[in-house]
Image 1 (cartoon, rainbow, N blue to C red):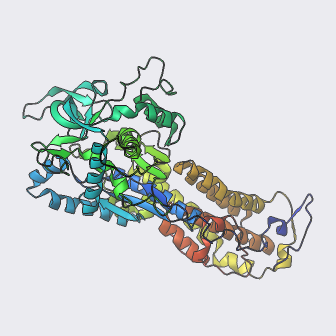
Image 2 (image 1 turned 180 degrees about the vertical axis):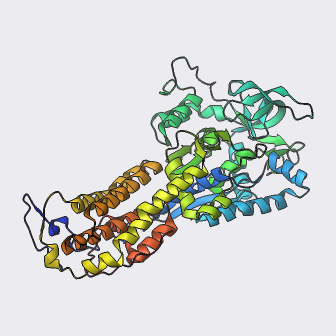
Image 3 (image 1 turned 45 degrees about the vertical axis):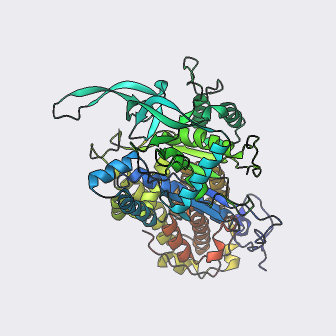
Length: 588
């Protein structure tokens, strides 16, 4: 075991006091399985609607999911991670788009679903389950849920009147729509009056139907109590307040006193007449006349994707979701409708002559991350406007990790819409290449290595007068894993990356200040500067794995870091770099 050759600190600092030579201990994290098996970490992204080709917003959501999935894997390598992605393939929009294309809906979905999967694979998204709602496994789960809710009395048939949006495939209450003017679809120029959703700006039309209804109103108090006690945390906090406002709660802290609460939660339609909608899962109790409402069907993919219904809810079952990532436009469905359905499934059956098994408790998700949207030139992306940003083209032009990095650092605050800008992407790309790629090549250059390698341990233990830039850098590097972990645990992706970039800026400043390539720089300083730089790069490389996995892998490979020493605990330990020869490689 290596010894620390000096023991005192005074007005000067010795190199050994930087802990450069402290031995690495490998009992950092027990790899043994605890007495009780760990519940897998379960992460979901929304399943995308394949009525058109993917845009940059789809990639953004997938990248966010992948960041948290990769982070969890290296945070605790002993805990399995289940990461669900997929496509939502039923509904009127798909039916109409397939008719327009002159193909069967399933063939239409096969083609476009493949494009979404291609996007995920191209972007190195590490999903473990890619679920399509046209799969038989999903259909069986949805039918099971419907029959269970029907048996328990939470489904009834009733007259539904309300504003319906074909674009959003959902109904809106009077308070959720407003008058607007839209471009006329006829050949005549001008605009026409219309009603639109306040939340999404999608056009709506008044609809009257005989539908099957779900007793959502029965769960208002339970949902309000659940969110008041923050049993499910909705992030960022303004969205948590928005959920309480949807429930008519007076505790919504972000609402001004002048804001009237939204109407008390109403029952929702969960079917459409088959005369209007034939492409979907038939209602099992009325298959000839009704099709399940697409959002009811789609929300259950988070259950079907992990094998629901289960014979029992044991420790190997991933449910409940630890984190659900969604866009702000679908917050209502994930924060109200899905939890209410889960509560209904967990409730006891009414007394009847036929005995039934006790209900299987289905806990609600732990966290919901609701993000804002990407725009182009401050406008919502739209095929009609011709401003849809192509994610595959962007990755081909700039590189996968550069696009991932840009989406994460610019879009990682989640509170406000973000504008897609090739100019800003180029700017961030150049900064990352300079701070990381060029730095790696600089500190491992032949000129620096030729001076550093002959230095001995005794040289490295000589006194360096304060102030000492290397000491400051090393202390900052050792603090990085804790800072990044805190940010990611708080679902602050942008903040986590900013911590890493701040360290890289300090690292570049340090090497510029010391100038180890200068003939006047003492060999001991060159030696210590390279050791500190290599350790900084190792820690940075481990922390960058969730964000830019390919570049991080190149960096760690170039440093010679073994595959088994790239987890979070390894980033919080130290490595002895003495006698190691590292040749820099191009990262970009």
